[in-house]
Image 1 (spheres, rainbow, N blue to C red):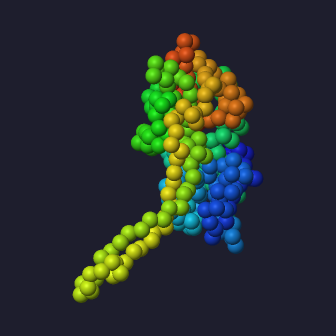
Image 2: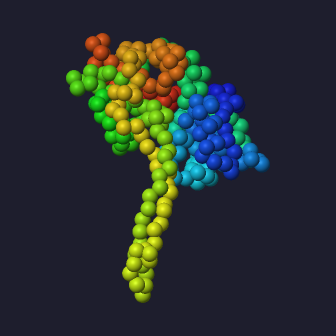
Length: 281
C-alpha cells in the first residue's frame, strides 16, 4: 500500500513568518499537539512545530525560532512500510508528505496507519508481542511538576498512576500536562554597582528590569488532574479489539492488566505498527 492511499489531504497548518499565539490558536481550534508550517508564497514545507516545542522555548515568540526546520518527510509514492520505519525511528506520530519541490501535499500519521491498515489487515492477531513490559509509573500524590520531570527523564509520554497500595488508579499523559500549563510573563530586577571612577552612591547604581516568559504548571498532585476510571485491556486481546477501543475513546495507548487488575504493561498504537515490519519488540 502506498502513502497516498493512507495520508490525509485536509489538516491543520500554519504559515511562516508567524507567532506563537497564532499556532496555539490553531492547535486549540483543531485539537492538535503539532502542526506543519509552510512558506506563505510557495507552500513549501518550512518545518514542524509542537506544543512541546512551545513549552521548551517559553521565552520565544517567533515561529522561525520555535519550529523544527528539518523534519523528516516522505513522498506520496513511497510504501506505507517506509513511513512506519521513519515514524518509529524518529519517535514521532506524524510525517509530512511532500512533492519533488518540497511542497506540502499531505500528512501521514500513526492514527491513519492504524485505522486504514493495521485494524483492517491484522484484526485477529494478538497484541502480546507488542506490549511494553517496562513501564514507569507515578504515585497519585506526586506533585504535577515532579511528574513532568519523571516523564522527561524516563523519555515517556504517559505515566500510569498508582495508589500507595500499588493499585492502578489513573493515567496521565504529556498532552494532559501541556493542556494544564500556562506561560506567565515575569518581571524581575537586577542591580549593578557604579563603574570604576564614579563616587559610590545609590543614584549611581544601575537597575535593570528583565521581562521573561516562564512556563508554569499548577501546584497540584497528579490525582487531581489524572484521567481516572481508565479503560484497560488484557494480554489475550487481539489487535482488532484494541484498535476498536482506541478509536471509540480517541486514545493512543491502553494499560494492559491481568484478570485480577494487576498492571503488566502498556500497549501503544505506534507499537502495533511494527507488525507491518514484522519486528515485535
